[in-house]
Length: 242
Image (cartoon, rainbow, N blue to C red; front, side):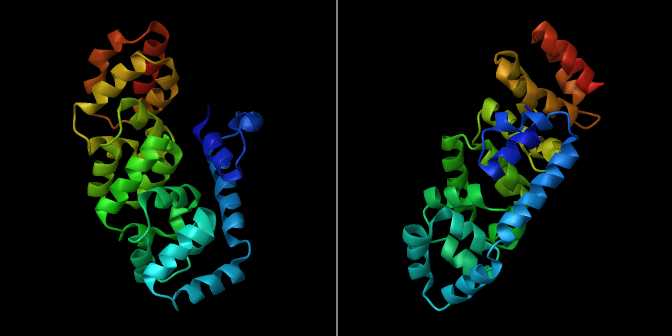
C-alpha cells in the first residue's frame, strides 16, 4: 500500500483500507494533506495547551514527569511537547520511562519538537527505539529518522532486522533519506535486505522503494543478487534500478 496512505491513516486513527480511494492520488499531495491535518490537530486548543506548558514550569521536573505519565498521558504530552522550553522539555523527558516515551513518540509531530528530540540522551533514544521495534511501530521510527543525528540513527536502525529496516525505510517522512540511512549501516546491509525481500512477498513493495532511492553507485552492489529473486520481483527490481 502507498506509504503516504499508511501514514495518513495513522494520523486519522483509521484502518488504511478505508483510504484506498486515495491510491491513485499523487503521493506528494497525500503527504501535504497529512501535514495539513497534523497541523490542524496540533493547533486545536492551542491556547489551553500553552497555558499548561507554562504552568508545568512551576513544578520540579521529577514531579512534572510523574504527572505526565500518570495523569496527562501520551497524547496530551505529545501536544504540549513543542510548546515547552527546550531545556525543560529535555529534563522532563529524561525522567520518563522508555515505554511511555515510545507512546508519546507515536503521537508526536517531530517537526514541532526537534530541538528537544536532538538533545535527549542517546541511550534514552535507543531505549525508545527498542520499544518501538518491539511494538513493530515502523511508522513512528520512520518519522524520527530525519530529526536525529547520524550516530543516533545508526544505533537505532541498527537494532532492526532486515524486515523491520525495510518497513521503516518504506515509511520515512523524507524518502530521499533512504539511501543516507542505509549508508550508515555498512555495505553488507543492502544485499541482506534484497535477500530478505526474496524470501517474503510482503517485503516486495518496501524493497522496491528502497531500490528506487539508491544513488548511482549502489545498484552495482545489488545487481548480482537479482538472480536470487522470484521472477516477478526480479523484473520490477531491474526496472527500479534503471
